[in-house]
Image: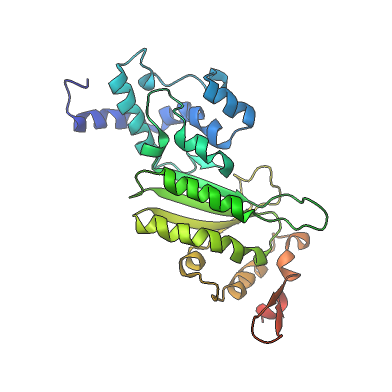
Length: 271
């Protein structure tokens, strides 16, 4: 096929091959890398079929010549960009595996062809009764650096970042923004389509299914350390009845201004 058909016609064939049904049947080959357990990831990269199912025929050199198999796999990454949560990374510490491992053993690295990613940063569990839940900012910075350096084609790359909290603590957001905002603007400056949302999850074990989610693009896009944004967010949260009292930790937080000694509680902000 490589020798007889021009690339435009070959791409039309790949578009028909990678339809919704076929993508659904084979998506597990990569999904365990991004969402599964450590056991699945280990099996996947050691080549055991239990890790992600049988290799798709169109990417198997036993059925196609290697050049066609590689080209079909490149099309797989391009076409999968139209499917939400197809590359859902719930464990950012695995980003290196997602970007740099040749899971199909064809010499095609995701870092060169990946066109979409949903990336979740989840609030950590309590380390002690006196330590509030939080997202580890140093690790977040390292993981975003890995992603930025790893994506070769940022033009048109779709990145969906979700900040997930089990306890709603707005005082943590500024620390997260200090890490996230520079990467947000850097990706967008190179033509990436970046969206950021905040999600509430009452249990941290199944955070791919959020109980509540909203866009915070307007805050991230305009954020500076001086930006006043908490009042609007509190008003939004106070309008939602599904959050339990025990999760509304922002009501107990105290926001202090650098000027003077005036302090504002969450109740003050919604007046």
